Length: 277
Image (cartoon, rainbow, N blue to C red; front, side, top):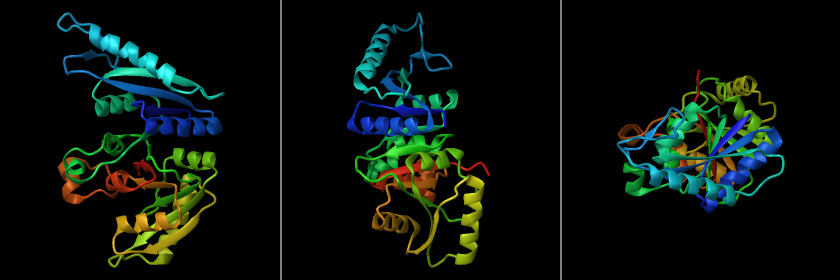
């Protein structure tokens, strides 16, 4: 792991995300880029890196002033952590678009950001910024909530319908946190695979992902999401890892997406990732 992106809005959650990222960096030798997005209209022109471009058709002086003020505010806001390199960035635009563009254009391994989640009609029609970013991000996202739990207790929840390879950043993160890792399968009434098959796929996944020490658990529940939450709450899990299917909007509402729901509802830290295989 070399580079962590931390989008910030100067809130206490942003501060928590920054210090979590800094702690990871201390143990992995990574660096951090703090990114604040300055709201700007669609008339603003930016280059391939998201930086403002001067235009005769639009007076960008106000946006420039806001960007400069944002850089100064970031510089005075973050606390220096010895032996951690911190870069500062302020870019114009809309939060989700800018962060996703930065993820694609930069060489980042992980995004760490805070979220309050969302619920009700807001969840269906708007959703949280973090949810949208996590569902579309090409790299893993670590979402931090405002609760305090031990990140050293990690659960990787999956159907384990087949063996897979978790992004290497996950095993790096677990090593950095000195984590106790549990592989969790929620067994519902319609589950077809035997416990022996599930355990075998857990072992294959661990081997492919470079995870050497782990616990295997099959937990019975009426549905997957409540089963994950119940197990994690009962075992004081601080960090839950789950695959993101990337569903958003109406598709998510019609077919459901457990990872998106958990970003909004699960009260502790959540690590979401996409699989390439």
